[in-house]
View 1: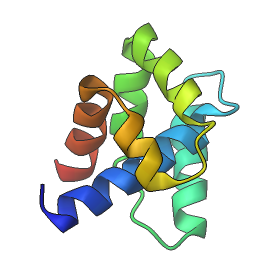
View 2: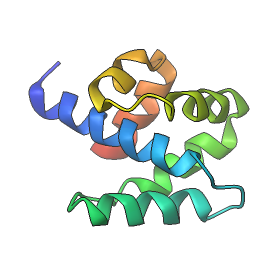
View 3: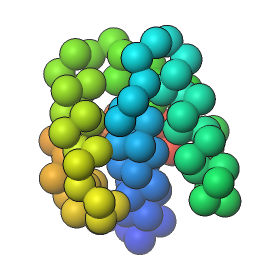
View 4: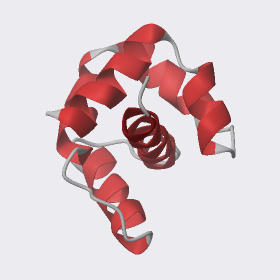
Length: 94
């Protein structure tokens, strides 16, 4: 895994976890994701994509809710399942 890909995954893990901590309605996940990343000075272009993945798969929604409890972005990404990592990587790479 390249460093750029790993860092993108960490950012995606952070955005996914942060947006899942309180969003309940369509659009809320992406809005919270964008606000968090823009406040951190990071690219938020993958937020809508990630929301689509999360809301279409209840297992991913549950996993990202649990990942939100992990503070460290690297540890959070490492703890993610292959399907969660695939969603993060897809949304930050497309």
